[in-house]
Image 1 (cartoon, rainbow over the protein chains, first blue to last red):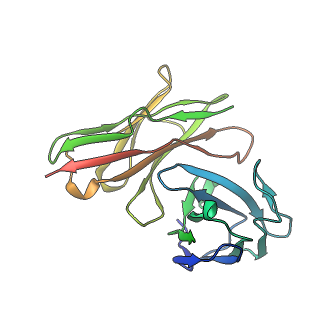
Image 2: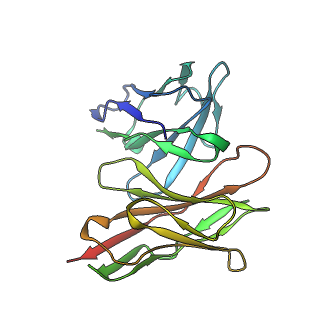
Length: 115
Length: 115
């Protein structure tokens, strides 16, 4: 399995500002994913980020609000732009790892509070 | 469209008793099925998966799950619950065929093990 780290682990931000979350993986992976978990809710996929191509966003999520970078096979960033209190969530990075490309592993998450 | 149902928001069980966390799914074709656990203020940890083969799958921390195709279920079980098993459990599904396809998560079941 892959070991995934995220920075920051938590942050408190003012509305209207932006926050960039970093995701680092200990091995090269093709597919990386960003999820949002709102308080008391399940996971919602924001986008899929493959190295060398534009991120693919799910319905309800747009690049202007959640720009993603994927500069290499071990790193990605997600920016939450022009934040509002509704953006308060846990943001999780996830990768596919292992033979068969069948299991996703998750980072520890970034807990974001927007005031 | 694929879906996952976890009918119980919360399951309470006494320490030492067997536990079951229920999951049913809907997907086109054969499924890949997963269980994840989320401890407070942590990311999701992979517990076990069903890909093919034996319907009884064994995973981490003494957990197991039984795939039942006729009932489209994948219930998580453990013979003897520990207080440390108290956490949020997510079931997930995706189609088995056609390369990687998006995983759908259930809404989660909070397991409370009572000392």
